[in-house]
Length: 209
Image (cartoon, rainbow, N blue to C red; front, side):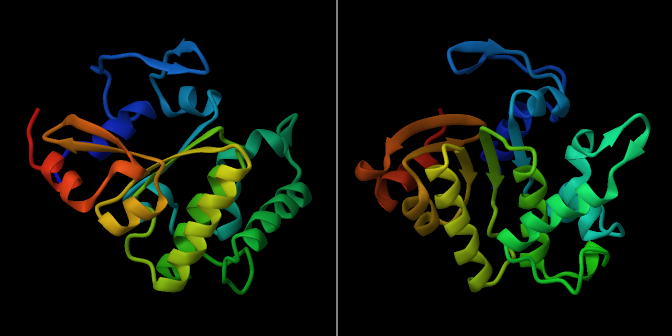
């Protein structure tokens, strides 16, 4: 907490503030991200740390929460193809094993783990090349954690790059290829996972740049 990790990825997604410096290079070219729309246009998705405030519209249905960022796929000439919207949303709900009576129930009625799956589903529907997961297993039960880990591994096998934020060292060491440690808003080191230990990470996490 307080390391600046969430602020960093939110800036990468164009949502933290306008006074942001630095360069973002993707596939060998510089890209300019000034808003979430710019990030989405560059095939970047963000599952935020606070899913209830920033990731979901709680009084809307599971269906609408999943399909919202992808409405261009379902609309033309001021008309929404509701059958296509339902069909595509149902595929992701089934793939992520979202437990809900149906897709029309308000997302606020779901458990924390299933709410998190809805947030992930809506970004997967946009077909991102890069998916940022900010503390994706916070507040979910063990079963949901396992399913999220499995999903992350499956996405990587499909060619999706994942940036995961976590405070749980076992999770970091178990899921990462490379680990960047932050302290007081600065990167204090990047470790390949085969060289990383809990002790090395803690040293870097308490060493201000």
